[in-house]
Length: 115
Length: 114
Image 1: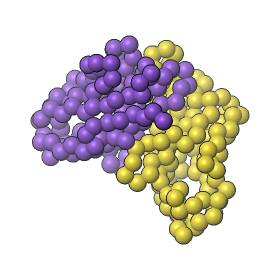
Image 2: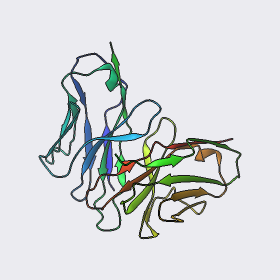
Image 3: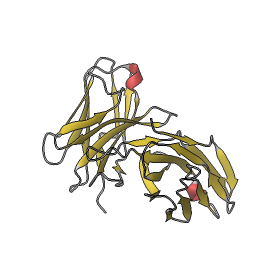
Image 4: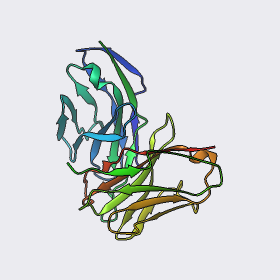
């Protein structure tokens, strides 16, 4: 079946540091890949997505490139802010045709950014 | 911007009681989902729903669970007889089409079973 593996957290960085959160996946078809973010006490928000190989998703300074050859979708940001402190979830959609695309999530990586 | 809403935000119930969690998906969306997140664990798929019927369900979604779209706007998850292990955050999501389309999540209902 499909699966998503994320690096274990927590990740603690100082403000303006470079961020990488690793994500690799296993899928039988041609999945779409997503990063969702969960701020403290809130629900899941879509951060970015990529729907095919070599696509780059980007939003709010975050980027991730869909790498089919390494089955990876690592999240990066050049300069993190305190407000980026949250839990980040990598996810893929299960390409099952016309009946609905369930999301398979990784375990989540907690990011804490110090001032 | 349209959003998915969920009620209640928190629910506390006694073991064995029935609970109904409510969701209002984005109005022109056709596909609806329930996920849950046990504290500190990953988000898990429960069920997907399209055209007034379940299209896929996970092994978690046993006979104690049911979903319904009672009218044109609400989408509900019912747990018939709650167990302690049902304590979790329950998220509703919706999407407009299927093929690699983004799912938009509600803020969640935190369910605590005592």
